[in-house]
Image (cartoon, rainbow, N blue to C red; front, side, top):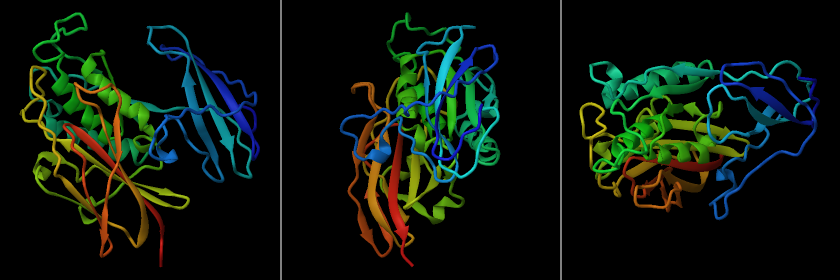
Length: 334
């Protein structure tokens, strides 16, 4: 990659093969590629928009020419880079992806990740070291269904394992993991959510909040049916901060069960209380994957809040498997 000076914009064309072939770059100047969704609540939450960070080099956009994966077929990925620093950058672009090949969640046996609680422990351990400390990108796969289910299989009665895949996908969303599996409709809510809200899931400036129970409390009917204590993150911004809280539904089965038939009833009375650190609350957004009977798009809502004595209280909009709540605060007043 040729040197990039302050104020410069670079669109790098990177050629990758599934077998891990060589990469090349074309440093021709191009305008950044961005996408937007009409009716989004705030510009901050628009999918595909990554603003340049101050005084550094930022990859603001990545686009692939591939929609469907074909074994050993070359793919072209275009990355847009913006340099806002006073330094020149040169060298080779490298993307680290760490593959965790624990893909036998639905198999027989007693490995820890075949139990929902043990699986969450496993993902959090991955995240805390590999993502948070060495800033790698995490992927778990290849998750097999061990029942020979395909799209040609009859969908009834378990809808191709819909419930199990949604319980499992909620854990991947909340722990900074990508996922690879043989596609079934039950994966789509998770994958769409990851694509839409990747800025709040995988970015290197998303940091785990230690001892989150001192910052966030989960109460109300249904609070005992969710995991959340280890799934709170913080992102500092140029003009404030964001607190990102994931609520993951605890499955009703002891071990992962693809034959589980029923969706859980939505939890609509869970309450979150967070400290403001004397900052000004700007807004609260709630995001969740779609239900079986809904249009195939993530559901986002602006949440009404009550601010009193330095605490923000909300009632989380109803959800079955997963909800991500983003609290946006202004600068702390001292």
